Length: 195
Figure (cartoon, rainbow, N blue to C red):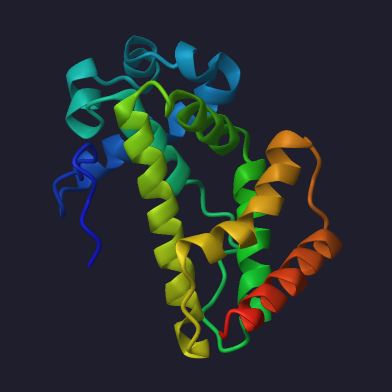
């Protein structure tokens, strides 16, 4: 069981009203973030648009990094999350396609770039960024369990790095062929390391 980061508070389990409020705030934040940017997404604006108090926002997200963290990890269900499997190539390919779809969502892309940009100067953002990587690595390793392969953080970076570079630095969409090439080269590296 993964420990929750200290800056991330969960709503009271089993309270539908709290969950509905939280879901509404997240939906409004997803709409606003690409429009106003991370610095424009103030708690005053978000509270006004989501029809909640700022106190409610701080109860769920004590700082903007916590809000961005949740926006990234609880993005909209795009219906393409991979299934666990014994074929490492298929799982890794599906994982990268899911990553491509997620980062292509304007709110998620903006949140990822904001957390990354702020990480050097904001400890909450640095912690959120580290937790996002840990969470995603753990999720991928769960998908890989049937194959018997478990990867390290370095091996994970070698897998997703080219896709994020293509999306965020090159500002280009990684094609299916690009993803297939990345996975094929990554598997060669894993085999050389004895996986």
